[in-house]
Image 1 (cartoon, one colour):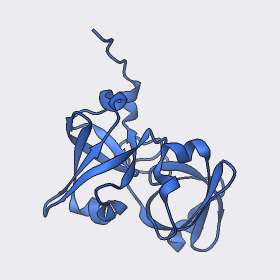
Image 2 (cartoon, one colour):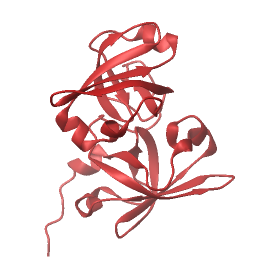
Image 3 (cartoon, helix red, strand yellow):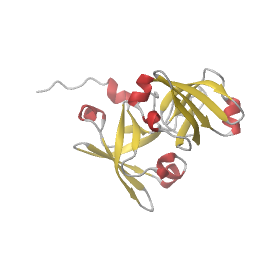
Length: 196
């Protein structure tokens, strides 16, 4: 379980695909590496992965084919910047919203509008995701807890405040980039209306 409040931005040092899986190595701060235990869950760009190895500044993960298919992990190269969030501990504040780390889909950034008070992102989404997008509802973009601003056919928008923008990898996104989307778990759990 995560909150969508990013702890730090890590750097991909290795992303090697093998037979149906990939070995992902991420450079993180020495403090985060030291406090991470083997077997612990860490969100990398919003994808829940298990720490399978580490050294002074690197965490190692294995990602299976189904995870690669649903997320942008398969697109990461050496030097790619990724959002990192350790799993939620019982005594910690819940500052964002409940994020499971199970990405629903990979979506394309249609447009990034950079402002002074906020930055707006327009993101394309699949039609079957429409019931999970509501204005002022929650969504996780590359693991970042954000609020849906508006929803139009095939496109939803979010506004990102400067602090969040500058403390996540969202500041490096450009039109055409692929981002991981996890729709709000609570909306996915509500009964869906029957077609009329």
